[in-house]
Image (cartoon, rainbow, N blue to C red; front, side):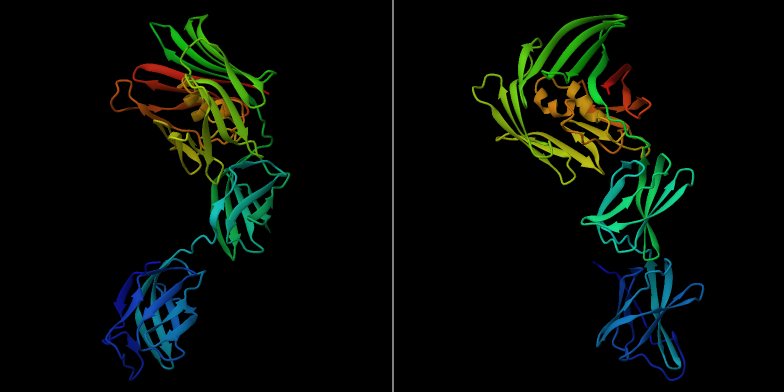
Length: 434
């Protein structure tokens, strides 16, 4: 850690008592230090057992434990409960006081590193908070938006701590704090408690965009979970109450993990057949795709980060699709980026990700990328809902920025995501089955 130092300990003044002299004209102190950390003073005028006081602007004195004294200075511990502020560093010896200089004390740092915790849970459920630095006897304090407070004992676990939520905890959003060693640190600004988290299957997603006059184009993915599992992408012309089917492709699961293009109405798909290989946790690790014009399938490797978010789909020749995340939110997917500026805007933690839904409706050429999402195999969703989308401009130069808005059902699932592109109103609608 880099430390900034300031010179002090001038031999002119700063000394009370009789006959005391500084052997050097100056010493060097750190400019700032964190409460609970170590402070270094470079000076060769210390006795073997010096006493150090930290004196606040209010005149209150705080003893600091000296760790080690050498010929060139000393190291002392800054009390971890010392309030942030500016303090005079004072050397005390019998009948004498020497002010060595001043030092800025910063607030104590969060003692836990590698922190990971869920964004939602339910009453009576065990919550595991991962991280290094938790200590025996620590507690978790939950404070609701209405001021309701719960202080819960934590048990040390292999990866961090476990906390059993009380059965009587009220549904809502909470701030979560760690209480340890007499200090309180923020763990999460938004932990959502659901009385019941209802899981639904995605049945259909529809993308509506303007066409000619009052007519609209509806592009849809429809998922049939009945045997045989079937995925159909279709395009409709919508004019008032009238809908006419213009084209569709159908993919049928003919054996476990294997899909074939059985009807090619769009004649646009590159993917004639695809086989998915899943690991023990049902995550796709590889997909073997028979691409139009090829005699043998191409293997694509699916890679994930440590939190389980998909980051890359690669063929032997190149990265085919890459995704980027920030704070558990999907910020970049292919050539479209997403902004998350509202920390309170979130769907049910088990609801399908809206970014994946949008991107699946933008691409008919290589649908194999989206099958695991559409079928519910890939369930990792962003912690929040995006507030803005930046996509390539239809003119071919620059980007188009679209503010996103949402409608929800009673279970906090998104039912509609809508935005405006220029003067055109667009939307994606979500239909679920229980």
